[in-house]
Length: 138
Image (cartoon, rainbow, N blue to C red; front, side):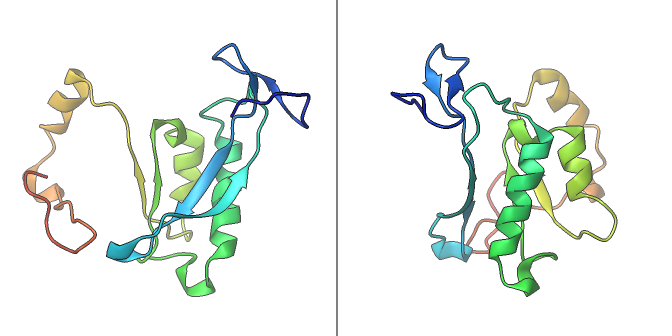
């Protein structure tokens, strides 16, 4: 997010511009998910992409927006790209008693692909689309 002035917390970015590096959370409601924003941190432009403390803060803000029955359990899935794939954030999500299913996206290199192929077949679960149908080839 490029800033044209000395706005609060604006800073130099890795793209050689000046502004903010926001961290946002969106909520989807089933197959007709709206993608509505529920939380945002307006961080300085030089904030790191994989700052676990910021991901934890954004997740806490997001969960606070949900009705209590959705703040933990199988009906809520926390998803992040590789920026949220830090040990600290994933450990926080997986903490005993927290009950927050999560999915971390990342680039699959050939080495990772070869290791994934070694995981025994009974361990895998099918990927399910938002309409509850199993995704072909997944």
